[in-house]
Length: 78
Image (cartoon, rainbow, N blue to C red; front, side, top):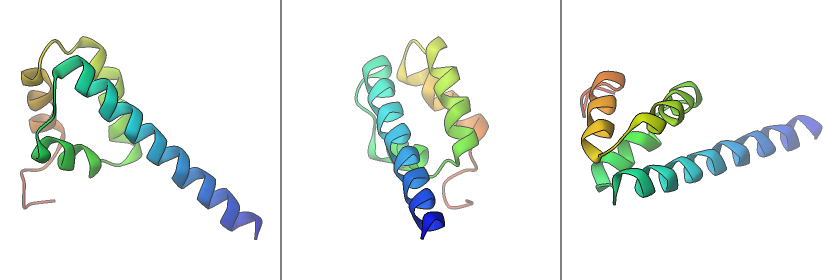
């Protein structure tokens, strides 16, 4: 029972971190396209943390797009 609770808490934390990251990216880069948002949601926890660190240097959506191109497989090859 404790293991299930711990797993649920961890999953909730990851969802919260993803939601916060999407909000910060939207604030920094403007509205995200559905494609960009979907690509971000497919990232694992380690990549999300890398993206969170990288977004501090972003100045536009072009920076985000470049980061996604270099850190994620092309669409359809995931």
